[in-house]
Image 1 (cartoon, rainbow, N blue to C red):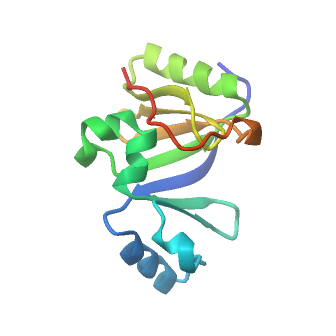
Image 2: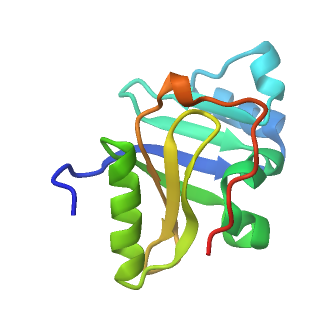
Length: 149
């Protein structure tokens, strides 16, 4: 196992109505972008301490979460941990799945430039594993992630 502990850095919610969700969090007091960003498929809301609340529509989740594609009702929240390297994402994913935890999205090079994977915890909560973003690895247009099995 990698010597670097994972860092809790993100909570990702798959939302039905992006505008309604943004209105709720704005009224709560969270700094929410106006304009074009509010109509997108993905919105990142940075908290003062650096934590990130990320909202995704079904169209966005479909791109990066294979298990969500198979069962949208079974995956509405992803707790995200950052890992120090791309290799650490693969190592941690395979360590966890080898120990019997369910793989929900096998590691892949995500269109936003990070290495990304998802594993279910013992209660079935999705836990995302993400490397730092490498700008040179960004791709557009986004392609759907590989299957989770």
